[in-house]
Length: 217
Image (tube, rainbow, N blue to C red):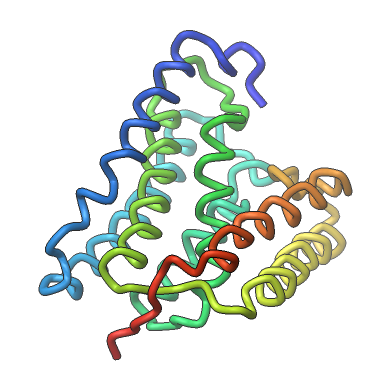
């Protein structure tokens, strides 16, 4: 966490702009169903472009650190799930993507991860852009493709969390590194908070069942 940036004037401005984006986001998905094929490919391309841009920026600025720069954090893992849904048609992953995208995007905007450069820097804007893509993809899947969280969402989420954190655990063992990630730096409390947060997101949806799940195959 970047102590000098968190809740600074710049950070509060970003939070305000991100809040406005959350408000207008549903309006940006209207009448897109006829163009869903193109929209989904564009979203996937933007995700890949943002990840590549971040990696290139870190290398060009001489700040690339394998321990902290590899795109394997929860937010990145969520981006890969998004690509799997939109490009590879793995629709069953929506249960996980729904909660992870909200927790990773909103959570990482509020508790901004530590960036070893002062604001403004391109890494800040790439991070913000990546969270906007996740939110937009989530809203798009719900509003346009009419996806719905199923009753197995909590079970699917728990399985995914076990797989993800186990992957990081074994990666650390086999590489003798300590991959410090948000919610995944082997601080048990952080891991528990992440799992609880991603499960809590399902409660209002499952209780009120406000979304439809009509998958166009």
